[in-house]
Length: 45
Image (cartoon, rainbow, N blue to C red; front, side):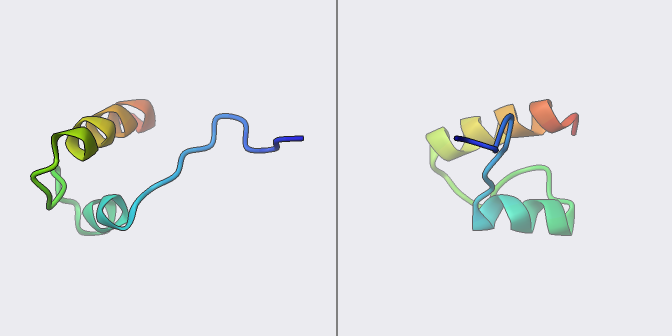
């Protein structure tokens, strides 16, 4: 049984961005950037 309903996994880069208040990830990977934008929207940031 999965108890992680609506859970979100954050990468080290995403946690660093949240911790430092950076609006962008320190990466040039378009997939990671797109996922970060979607997560920020879901979090209301």
